[in-house]
Image (tube, rainbow, N blue to C red; front, side):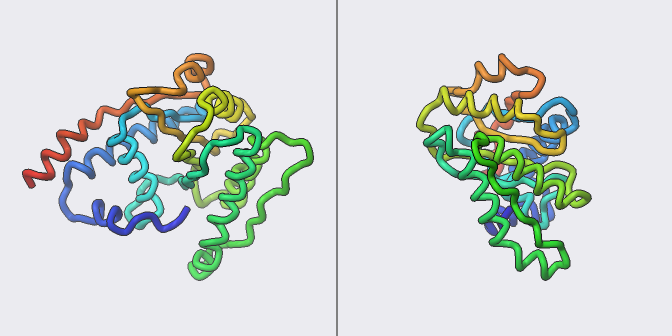
Length: 221
């Protein structure tokens, strides 16, 4: 949700195929394979810093006219500081991002009266967030195949709780049309144990993007 980066969108608006576009196409193809799995709920991209930038770029481009995937990706960049409050922060971010575009989508004759479900007293934060995502997807049924929450915290204070929180979210009963996406550093992964525990709900993709090769191609061009 949001407009993304204008300078990034021009990458795919070019008439000619280039090295970056080819990598984006590969990521989209891998995403579609994951999305077609009816049992999977959480996708872990296992990649390096350059690969993470490409995944982030793919998400940003889906908010532009160049985006071709039938899914809505919403990026959440809240730091993971308190594992008991993180989901509440994500819920508020979804509300804030929606309010930012509420008027503009109305101008395009898109319904804009979604209201986020209120938290239930005593309800865990991750369940509150899951209900918000499911409500949003239901309200815009017919406009997307999947609602995708891309969790991209700039800092993670407790790796063990981060892994535990994501595992609980994957097991929270999300429907097939609501998915979660995260990035894990291939050089220092934090989420391997979680993925080994829950292989049905959680899928790992390690894309072979060869970004040094892409940069070399661009420099030659």
